[in-house]
Length: 318
Image (tube, rainbow, N blue to C red; front, side, top):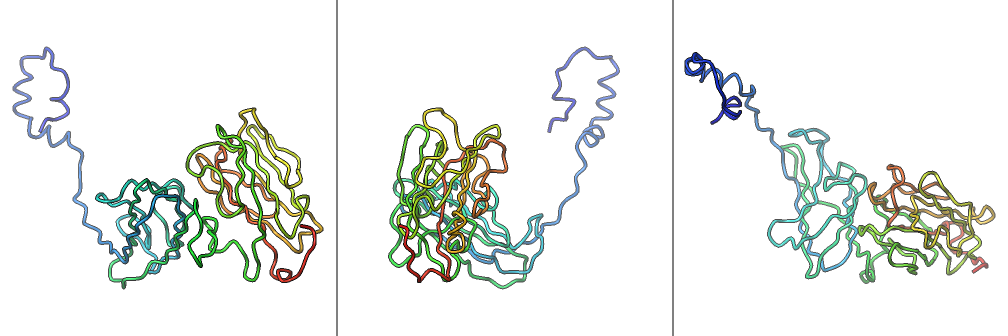
């Protein structure tokens, strides 16, 4: 093995140098090498493994709270779970967004990843880790298709990061969402789950939300945030909020119900951003922005909810 000195360019040297090198070669080599201490292997246990086969499409995978005693193994806080694509047969499934973090690792509280499965489908593997000596456990998984019709009998896909966006006894109010997207123009979506260009880095430049029942469009209000601290005033629902044709991305947004309807309805929402990924859930007029300044918005998940106390009532206004 060559030492650091031997790797450097050779050149003229004093005649005594070869003798010094011969006498000190072994010692010099030992001194040049960094001191290392053999690390003891730190045991870690695999407490659960699941394989999921995905058809082509876009999916939300929610991993529930992980069981097990909190601790640390090999420098990793456990229990923890990893989302991975098997080397053979993975088919190129991509993790395009995650909450709360940005990578394939989830902590004790679990979390959500957004997966894109290619043409022909693919496979993902979910592995839970814990300290040794703990019993094997089951993984709580909820897989939802985001770009197609929901499975028969399945609830609508919720927003990543939320176990349930609709309070017990409440109900979703049907809406439609209009987005003005970079390079794509105006696109109208049913307001169910994520809409936009999730994971495809196409900037949202304007948006609009219109209730289809229970409320009039003017009963909700919208605000858009833009680079360098720009923001719009509150704009009635059904009216495009943002800009067209100026190449100016939204860096955040907010939605609220007007005061005289706020006791009956509420709104909850998240955004997906180029660099910050999926935001925490915001509600009732709170700004939804990335933790990274001027981070473009690429997709939104907006839920208009009728509160439990009035869900069975009949409210005019649609």
